[in-house]
Amino acid sequence: MEFKAEAKYIKVSPQKARLVVDLVRGKKVYDAINILKFTKKKSAVFVYKLLKSALANAAGTGRVDIDNLVISKINVDMSLSLKRLMPKAMGRSAIVKKRMSSIKIVLEEI
Image 1 (cartoon, rainbow, N blue to C red):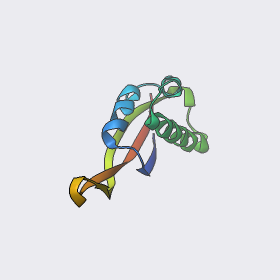
Image 2: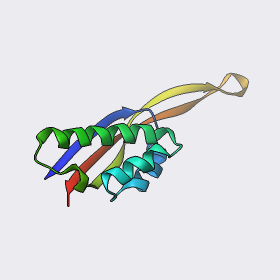
Image 3: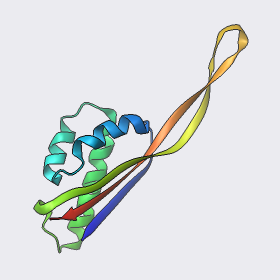
């Protein structure tokens, strides 16, 4: 049985979020929680909250042993990009894209 959770519009770029997601892909849930607690990246907090949400979805059914859950799929996709202007020389401006990401996680029982 698989349990899903999704977080949308997270204010961190997908490239930076993928660095953290690659650390926990394929791990057991409690190992992944320990890894995320001690990772010093901004996106680790968002992935940690998402993992806890997926774990709560699994625990809510009452038919699964939480110790046997594994992160089977976790991926980061690009969401919106906010376009902002940055002043440049001689009265010009440049566009700066503030990228957002969406993270999806799937837990399965082994």
